[in-house]
Length: 227
Image (tube, rainbow, N blue to C red; front, side):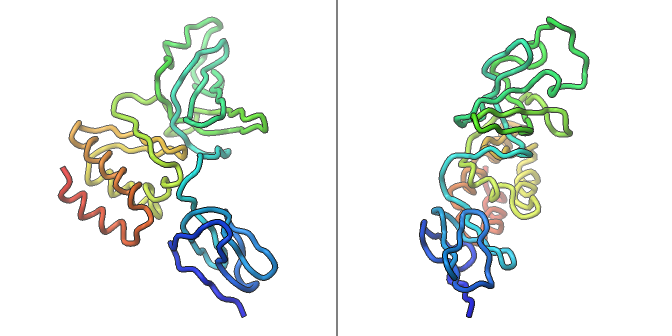
């Protein structure tokens, strides 16, 4: 007989048994051994239908193709820009993937994106040598102007975004800010100085309390009175 042994959003440690029987399937950060499913990581339990997965509470961001991340330009090469995403992978944004505008040979690339600029980019390739290729040609991908960039634990990104973007929508409505959340844990906030501060405080609060249930309701109260 199959049995789920852990509740939704319960904190578990590596090796802890999550479910018994064959009615459940291991998902991300969980594994099957004989008839049981175990946790691979310290994290929160999530159950989607028959699939049990663990969202880690800590650890580095692992880049994946299709992820949208916020990076900082650290160097300019003959063919593009070197971008740091806060992890031990080297990333390149080639000229052909940065803009649809024709760029003449020898053109000063720093006039387009300068060293120190932040950009919203999408990962198009990750190699076994820890090299990443980026693109900036899809809607919403661009050089960042104005506002502030803050850093959070990348594993808390799903909580900042919320189910069907419910949490980030709440943050935008209550602070009046444009907010972009990168999968690598960098968040761009742009609005009034007061709005940016309010949003940054709220995001840090969500990060600290991501394990709590009823977080959206709690944040509605917090944002209603936060200054």
